Image (cartoon, rainbow, N blue to C red; front, side, top):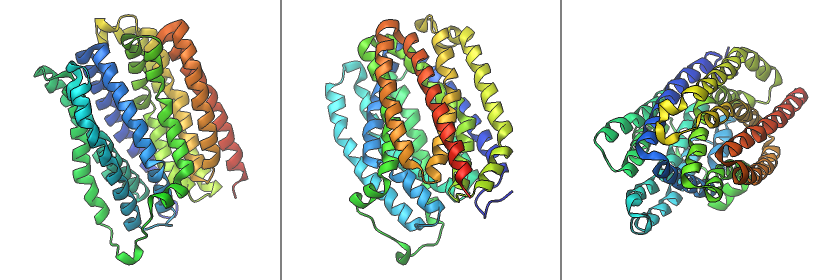
Length: 403
């Protein structure tokens, strides 16, 4: 079924297949990387990436999400979308100034982590290209690029065999994957005809005014990852690595929910209740599959995590179980908040996300202080589950009020 030329029902299956393949590549690469680096080096790189994500979120401040929604509703042209993308890319070049600081002042064994300053520049364009392909219904190209990028992450295997510096083993596959994605993906925005007449140039202040609620949503998501740093500050780098690796499995395991959300937010932008409900019913089996597969995988990790990750991650089974099981309520949050934002309720999402993030960070500090990484993992599972219930009930209420 086609919704006004937007997307087809079969697109959900296609997105899921692509995301599952990409998720498998992600899980394999993360597992090999954690095993090669060990808890301390893996924890250091993960925390550095979190810090970069925080600043990246501040610089973008929801511009990509807002521009994608406006493009989907035909309120802006492809030329304007590309202009916004390029303006945000230029801002991210400021991160290059931190490369010499990391090289000379980071601990000697971590000096090569400085190359990660390229990550914000590449990720900014990756995000814009993917959003453009999805709202333009170029699903096959979107999936191909994501799968290619994540397949390149598997370079961690030959790099570790070659005994490269641990920082390079962590960083290079990520950066090469994003670089290739941008080389292939960015020119796709030029394939649409546009002229200077269709171009609207926005200042950074104007973009901020339009995207501020999306920015608050983004920053809540970014600051929610600050839990990794907080756990490290009240425990140890090794203990926090157990927590971080358990959370790294959350996004890949929520792939089905994320894939359905990517398709349905384009449909939701029409604000047609019948279309949204039909799409939900069509994807019901996929959502059930997501629930069952995440639960099965979590139970498997309970028993086999130590064998997979190695002896340095001793006693991590229960932590991995709760961390990976969090993917179920997390997936529900992704689905419900994306749809709420698409139908114009981004103000509710931004305020509720801020409260959720504050409560989660506060509680995880206490949990980690008294019960270590296991306590922090269980705490996050409970908080995420409660927020998933709140957002899903809000979505149900709003959909009932749509025409």
